[in-house]
Length: 216
Ligand SMILES: [Fe+2]
Ligand SMILES: [Fe+2]
Image (cartoon, rainbow, N blue to C red; front, top):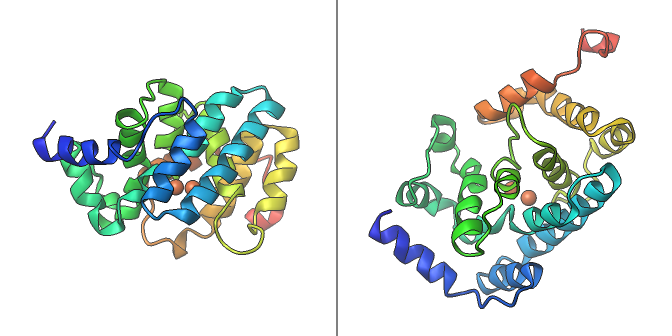
């Protein structure tokens, strides 16, 4: 670990006075760094992830914690993400170098571990793949991924919201597949396609007997 990394993380850690209440601490941390919108969004994702976990038989408290921390690296501005990743010895893929916003899921894992003391692998994986998902994702990763998409931070309801919510009645995997299908149909509009998203799509895409004629 480089000295600069320790120094930057030490400064971030000094902004947290642990209260034993993760939600309170994460909100205070984000507000202390001027990330009001992210604090609001993170609470919405945490509540939605916990709701989904309760409905689908997951782990509600882990889902709630991952929801609160998934975007915690919003405290690092976009212009500083590449440098932070290199200082923190986070692997940077070419797609992430081209679009450093995509690094925020990995940077959130480092802050969750170092500043908030999270060590549970499933919780860290849910934070670390909430943007792109990945092949072989676990249930908690899928829950937090969907909660993030359903609690998006733009005006109005997400255009895929109804389809994903309907699919959730059937299963978590069906809902993930429905969302990925929506994204994949619009891949031409994406600046880069993260390889983890591509691999998640290849794994979760609807089978040939699930597709409608409009998919052909
Ligand atoms: Fe995010
Ligand atoms: Fe988010």
